[in-house]
Image (cartoon, rainbow, N blue to C red; front, side, top):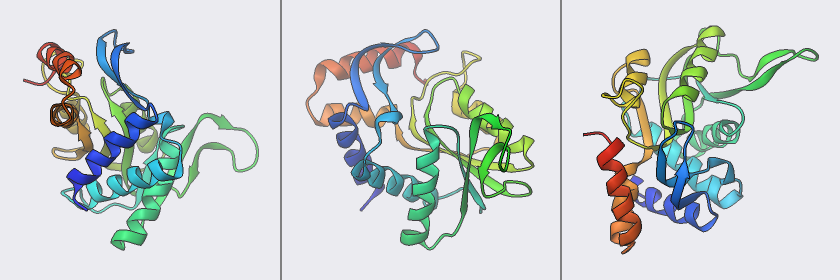
Length: 219
């Protein structure tokens, strides 16, 4: 199946379970968005199968460099990293480890904030859900670097394609300035959602999306 087919299937599944909604939603940034994506609701076997397959297909489509570890930031990223590592092995014969962090360091047992394979001295790809301001993924990059790893890529489920913190360039470009040009990839982009709405005759939702794009989208 092509990546475009995975995109369409993911949109349909996400809408069916309420993970993708259209309406009016205030974001952390203060912007009022005509759509909202809640990756925390991607919590069933069927939707995780679609999502992790799409993550894996996006990773192997290039042009990310070779890497050793998938990192899933707590908490939503944890199942994404685990299932994508599995699909990379079973579908693409790519063997990598996975790791994730805790919100707070554990003071007993193995201790610390990191769980899973060590990232020290390893090349790491971070799996993200949605990138708006990029605050969460910046935190993930800092965590990996603090534990001795090198972040060589970020793959997100949805790129909102909005202007970044500086008000001119995109959040993706800001993150790529940290980890390397062309090293941020996404399964879906806002323009993919708009194309899907148009193809499915959802004209009211499409109109709201276009208005939002005119105000905050990449030009």
